[in-house]
Image 1 (tube, helix red, strand yellow):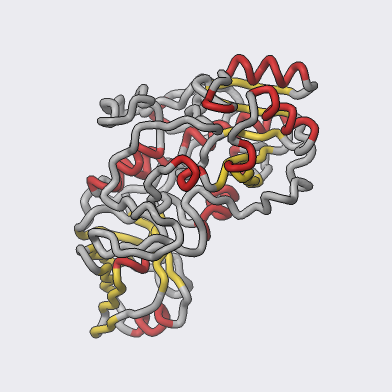
Image 2: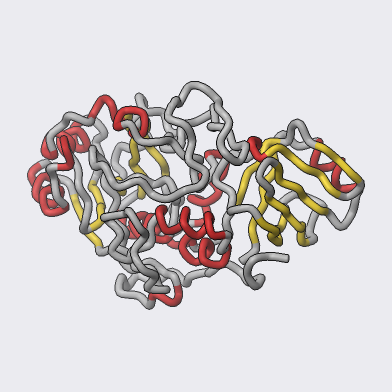
Amino acid sequence: MGRSPRMQAPSPRPQRVWQRSPETHTPMPLVSMSLLPLLPSPSPSSFALPPSPRVRKLLPMGLTEPSAMAPDASPANAEDHSHVEGGVVALGKFEGLHLGHRALAERASELGTPVMLSLSGMAEVLGWEPKLPVVASDDRARVLESWGKHCRDMVPKEHVLEFAKIRKLSPEQFVEKLANELKVKGAVAGADYRFGFRASGKASDLVEFCKKYGLESAIVEPVMDSKDAPAVDGCSKDKGQVSTTRIRKALAEGDMKRVAELLGRNHRLYIEVKDSVQKENVISFPIANVLNQPPTVGSYECSLPLEGINDVVQVRIQETEISLELQDSNLVNKITQQSRIALDFLA
């Protein structure tokens, strides 16, 4: 019933050479992600949220804005930099945690302890339309842990800086902050990286300022989309690289094989277990219960990573609800005992 043949997500073999075959989905160099004020063209998404970050409103398909954490927020404490000290920061906006982001973490791990450094509150400050995240906040730790085997057995940490507090820093002031306040060992970014007030700093400036302040640095090329798919309409930064924009487009098309290829793993959807409706071996939830971006309306095959449930679950996504058809009706009660569940979409 799935939209694409069932197959496992790519499982790349870790290597230390940075020119790699795109068909294996292993990191070549990183997709660059701008850290400081850069206004990309909006990416297409049928799950865009309303602009108010404080009020839960109904989306066209019944989705509501997540209230627990902003889409670009990170679980780290923005005021406590102790766990960043001595690490090598990978710079970007790591909302999708895709293959390009993993490549950046790998490169950082070659220089020291990798730390994914991103910003919170960019959408609110810059007036971007908030969206459901590709990766649920509850799932980020699992994804980063899975990257450990690619990062010299080090699980990348996460750290967040409040965008409003640093948006007006010049490129040099930002690097100075990394060196003197966060006390990092080095920084890694993509070749198209832009940073500093009004995105005035380039990757070459990052290298120059890192050298001035005694930091190691590395710049890598983007991880290219192995399918050589055309640029996403309306995205001026799309040069064929793996990107969150491409992942959102594949989700909007229900192409879960494509999503898995770009992520380097199967897409996992989190659902809050509340307001459910049960009928024999089927349990349904309002679509507003999803915590990250689901694929488009349709039927899919999923696995349910819950103890005692090893069978394939048939999942039907409709305009206002998402339904799970289980092979054993007794498992419905087990699901209702959870506060939230996860679905892994089989590619």
